[in-house]
Amino acid sequence: RTNVRWKDAMGKMLDRIATVQEEKEINTVILRDFDLQDLEISNVFYESGFTKMTMPNSNEVDNLDMNTTDVFLSSLSKNGRSNLRRYVLKNESFFDFEFKSKLSEEETNAFHKLHENVKRNNFAVNIFTYPIKFFKLKNENANWEFIVTRLKETGEIVSFGSCYKAEQIYCPVVIGIDYAYNSDYKIYKQMLYQAVKRAFDLGYKRVNLGLTADTDKKDV
Image: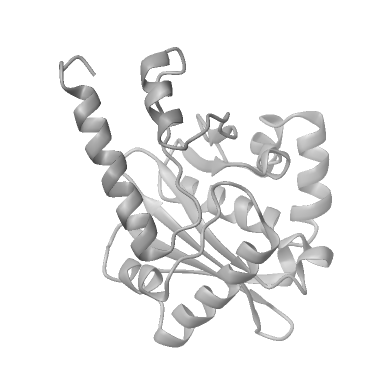
């Protein structure tokens, strides 16, 4: 920003974005983390057809301690404790959870399909349609792992989650859900809780739960 030619650089970047957007038929472009008070940068974006918006909250768990369920519950609000008991702990025994470093081809395709369910049911700014290649490439990176959730009674897979293991923080990133079971079992809340438990088991003290869904994420 301090370079005298910063506007030229911004212009080239925005021109390239516009070209890629047209080539790939992209509907939405989000550029984030700019200085809200910088009116010159804002004007450059306005002139290129962008508008300013407030991003959703970023949810994070700090100083994670799950040595016992009671210890973890004590870190939550009164409503959070009530919701965790009612919607998560009560239903936990209905599921089998498997943590895998790689998914089979069949599982990868199923994950992709279940994530498309999430995209159809969620219109938040941080939910995108991903190509199957995106899911396949995660299998090739040791920093990614997967949560596979099965209904214990039938063995049916009802949810997948992919989590990134950074050096200091654990990041649940993409989820796929079979919504036929979400109403009865609150699968989304369950997956958040299982991700937090997994982070603790791996020795993490911080979990980045990402943007949006504040109500669900406050319960874990």
